[in-house]
Length: 133
Image 1: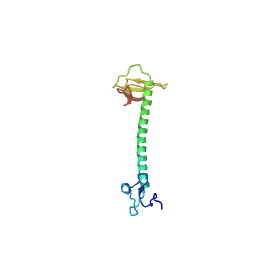
Image 2 (image 1 turned 30 degrees about the vertical axis):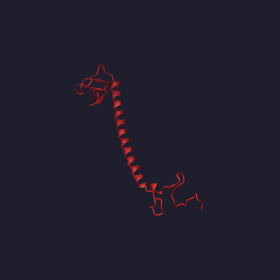
Image 3 (image 1 turned 90 degrees about the vertical axis):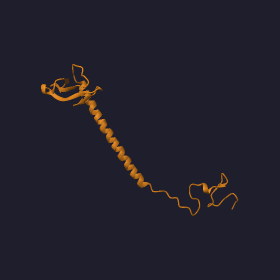
Image 4 (image 1 turned 45 degrees about the horizontal axis):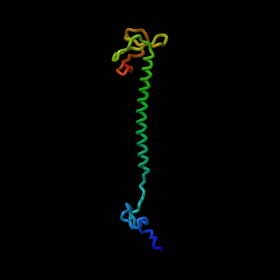
């Protein structure tokens, strides 16, 4: 055996030329506990399942919010594309009707006093967005 080569069971750092077994964060002698890897498959599967459920729930919330926003957009488009000869006042309720020729118009007249096809009553909020009553 050469003077430079140490046996495998001796912890010798050849770079610093010191015995550094006591500095290691793991056991270095034959009687030390065996280093084994822990089984993480069950934990990974539970975590993946939990994460997927959270992502799916968040996606459902976002989809519901998107659907509501699109419905509001279509409603506002319908009202703003209808004809009206007055400037709507914020905070007031107006009524949307359809004529025989399928054109729509916004009116102050309540449905009980009008013979046109009633489409709904709408409230103009402070953001200039129409809300169904």
